[in-house]
Length: 111
Length: 116
Image (cartoon, rainbow over all chains, first blue to last red; front, side):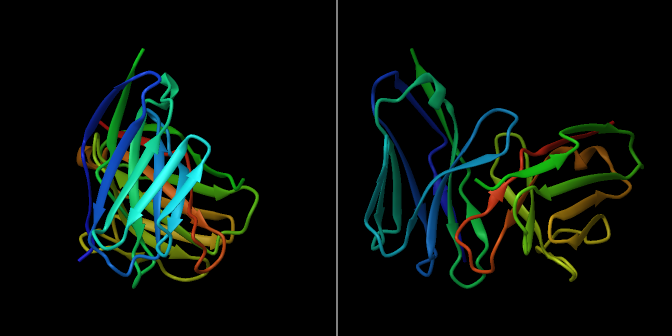
């Protein structure tokens, strides 16, 4: 079946780098995503990576994909207090096209 | 970018009443819309997928008679929670996809439903 796992909490100091990890089980996933959710709000797509890519960088965000290990990570450089939120990893299931979400990682950024 | 709105953003209703939540794509035509439910500090659970002009496809364990979904136009989908009970209290989020097979879903801001 399809399953996505994330650690639940990460705390960093402002200015440090944050790395949020995710594992998934569906080897036929086509796209993998990172979403950000601020309190009481919907989901904002931060970035995505196609399954045949290893890395994607977009300003402060770097996504690494290890397809062999089915491991995805999101690195946020120079983390700011405004980055405090819940970050969801999601995969687009290859057979159904549905998005399967992880439990979300709460990122706490301390000043 | 593409914008999806939801209305209302927050609703409180009495047990036994029905509540309708609207999801609109504001600047694109959504061939497919999705409805999710999110419990506090939990992930999003897909409830159903709706395609314009056809019946919604419900996920296993979601009661279709309780959660009525209508996708009458390419810019509007509605979710009606019928005979709501306190256990239906949750954060409901919709998303929309503009093209079949498109990589991206655009999410609405969510609706907080509280049933008293």
